[in-house]
Length: 228
Image (cartoon, rainbow, N blue to C red; front, side, top):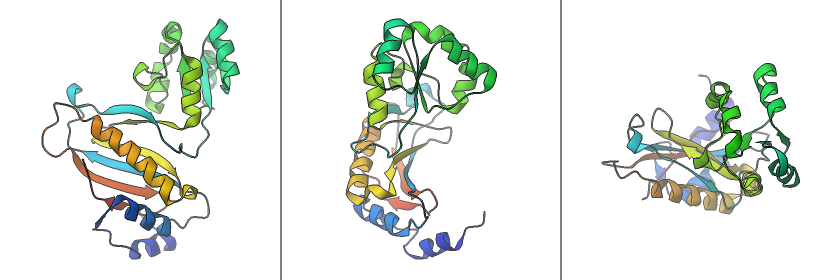
């Protein structure tokens, strides 16, 4: 993969092999994020767990102290009073069979999060095959299958993120935008790392935090000292 001049300049600006304390790493990252748009800052954590084992899964949700900087479009699948409540709470789209059909027949995905009430899960399950690979399938663990649709919508709009292990035992999760500045990014980073550490499975053996890296959309990764 060929990198542009800005990326190569950024690489020269710091020590790629060094592990920095979180605050210093964020400062280095902000100095090297040179794209003309407001880059997303992501956290990448490699864990010492086996993602193939059910008792070593790491997954959870939290509302970042300063949100993610992205306004998420929320689709709520509900009927009756819950549909009315979702509309009043600021959902971008609310419906039932007609929206399920739209996703199924028109490949419509103009939303970032789907929330549904438990009674509608049978209907939603019919399109699980298309929602799953896109990470859009509602799940009680992530708070997206719930009777309290108002709370779920408020949390998503406030900057709730879901972190979960991928097949290579790495968690990838946004912690904000470059425009947030160092202080807010460090606070978001700390909140997310604390959650990941608390989610350590009892079955995990050896070193839990293998490596921690933060990176901007277009910039190189900066290594952070892993701390339990």
